[in-house]
Length: 327
Ligand SMILES: *Cc1c(COP(=O)(O)O)cnc(C)c1O
Image 1: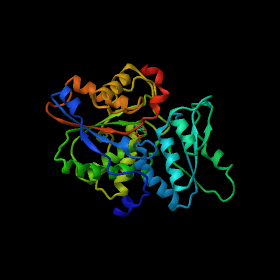
Image 2: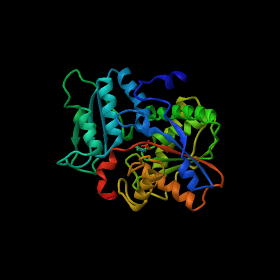
Image 3: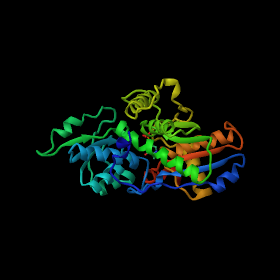
Image 4: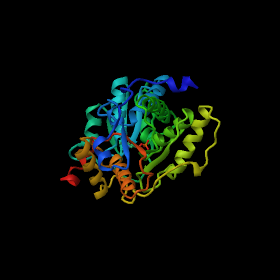
């Protein structure tokens, strides 16, 4: 199975750092809090999509595709990183974003534009994306591959399987044993990859994936999406395991406000980490997930003296679009 996991195109700088949050741990003296810095993957301001795109871009190259189509929200970190990956790999990048074209581009949308992506606005938020209507318009000689929203198909998921091997080595090197892992879960690929990597590399701790979206997307409820990905991945990686829905951890306590809606919770979390550690979270994903972790600490939902890891998945550029919510 090695060949599947090693078949990738280099886009980022790995391993990303893992370190203790000394000040925050002092503040919550019953716990040791660590952070894994996938905001530092190095691809056009970083983020978790870099790991997925290393596999997705390789798939595009291996199937002789010279055009990538993907989609997302206007502030999609995934679209921005896909645009950067395509620039690096000399692939034409089209991103389909929801809503109307704004007068001024900001945050991730601006960066996607700077990175050369051709941006198409759907003007209609709810309609399912019809990639073929765009692909049909390509010139002769161009061959397109569709990367799903968030890069969360089985190919992208492999990025987080390998991230767990990286984490395992860091934990060994630093002689740290973690008890809980918190992260933001939205399109499911990060979540599924982490679960598969834990199985493949024999890691044992409690996962607390914080559900970001309120609504169920076209592919179904998030836990079911993750379930399908882990079973597909288990098969691909020859893992002797069949997962059921009850094996998929998912914390749904913090998604009451809809996707991308900033509340006082995310503001509190972004401020807290900025002021204690000088580290910037994003308003949509990591702000919400970090708030969930702080809330669990405050309400003593975790075993005392335990070691907690927060996986920072990036998203910095979106902060600028949400400026009004912070000042
Ligand atoms: C996409 C994204 C996530 C969620 O990852 P999924 O694999 O889609 O669940 C988390 N944090 C940030 C910053 C992201 O851009």
